[in-house]
Length: 114
Length: 112
Image 1: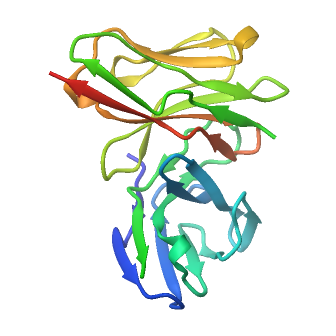
Image 2: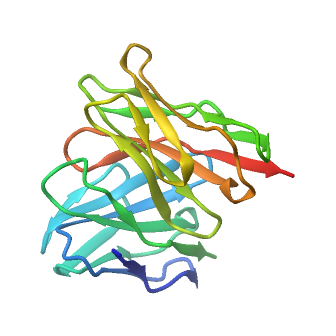
């Protein structure tokens, strides 16, 4: 089974802190994603990476950056956390080759910024 | 750009009754369509997907969905709901570049 692991399930951070959310997948997938999930808004794409060191902005990249130094690991960085970044963050991955390939999701990281 | 509308925010259904969740999409070409389910505190799990062929798609957990191009819809159905089907359901559309657009979700409550 494909496994997408988000190491931190629940975090509480202070405004202005730098926050790292880590994601690891074990199936050699080229594509990795970070989504943000908010009630009534569904999932919104923050960043997408299609290869090591390659990244592409999604729909809501402001206030976020990402790092992909190794194929299996994709990190989301909040340079200076703000209260409006309190949310559930979902990492996902998929193989390249066809849009119909299944996207696999991690269990999510709940971030509260106080 | 593609978009998805799930008109029902919340649906309550009795155990054993049928369930239909609505999904309307907006996209100029033939879309790639997906239904995902999210149980409380969990990530998303793929129920089924459509990108060509038979417009009636069978998925896991007894779910099916029908693609209707004329109505721009991809509604999800299950003939008999179980208590374990209580969850949030997301419809999503893809445009060939791996980036999906998700609907706002429909929360399903199952009453005994």
